[in-house]
Image (cartoon, rainbow, N blue to C red; front, side, top):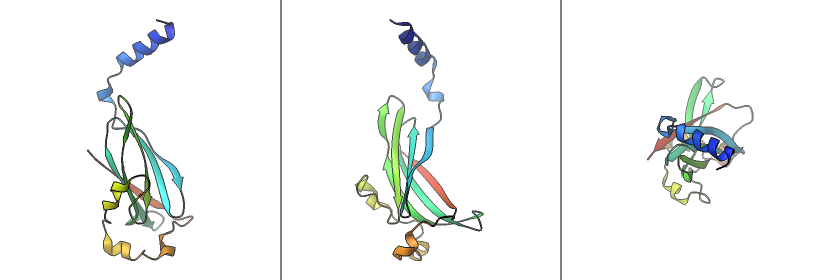
Length: 137
């Protein structure tokens, strides 16, 4: 074996993967538009993740209702590396990437009804938004 291969073997055998946190990298804003937010995240094991984007009030001091929603399931790319890019949109579905997410229902239908007009669904420049990530197996 080469010296580089010996070093790689020594490093990999000394790492206890069970001691790593669930979130290995991220969340990272991958893309934002006026109508959608995509977040990328890398995890230690497979997981289904729900992304909720919420409007805030009073310069971010008060968190309001969910305005964008999306969900996705990680893809295994290594022994202990699973990644996903989740797009949250107003209807809560990402039909192109995750057709199964069309079953996601708004958590606050009364609040969401107030932003049902197309012009109200756009994210506004200068507005502070909050997000939640919910993890499930």
